Image (cartoon, rainbow, N blue to C red; front, side, top):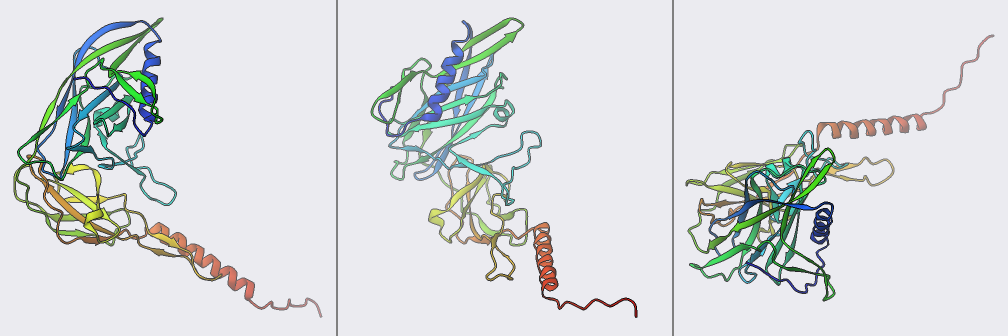
Length: 374
């Protein structure tokens, strides 16, 4: 399948830069013929209004790619990429621990793509650009190293099924064939570059540097619309006594292969609640480590100490069947928040005690010095 893309209102700066990097790398040395890889698209059934997930898996022979640029085509009347589908926690490359900001909050970003563990382990970054009018999602997998990408799952992308999608129909998600001409819009009605879906690998040895073309093909997917959703989870609870996270739990839903997703909002409004976490899970518990720590409220007046105010959240849970159909959100939300850590309280107490001591010293009456001698 080939697809040409014409003018768009948004300039795809990130993806375009990756494409140009790829083109520059191809010019470093004469390319030699490589082997084929297969990108297999896998998905599940969805109902109108549901979010479906498409997983891209790579199979390869001897030569593995160290970078990929690919495009997925979809019907924009039926599907829309979900830009905030996954809450990706930023982690330290060595320890794997979440990275915190100066206030103790976990740093996270939202994305339509969820990279796989083996892609992260390959030291690669993944970027995407959505061409909504044309119905194409561009994906760039790059890295500053020359490590090859391991076979297996590469990434998962989430699409929202339109509310008016007809039950009993199917919609296709297909890979744009390698070599198909893709015109990159510049945001002003013009075209800034012509690029193609492509893959490459780099082989190095003493005195030898070769860029290896790796050709690939797609195995596409058809997504059926319509299935029976499970019941909504019940018994949702959220903690209000933990400093490290908000711990959310609920009653498991009967059925094989049931998975869950937690939704969160700062207001008691399920309609605007957003999914959190990096995807669906089988466990009936969830630790919300990206819930904000209590806010510091400055005291009123010169001598008034600062206080802490909890950032309160409302939580709902969805269930998803083995076939991929989602339940409604749980009926009653649970309210939860993080408390201040003991270290933070101790620090505030020390500051307050120091301030009280300084105030006492500054206001204490001066005692006359005793005279020495007679």
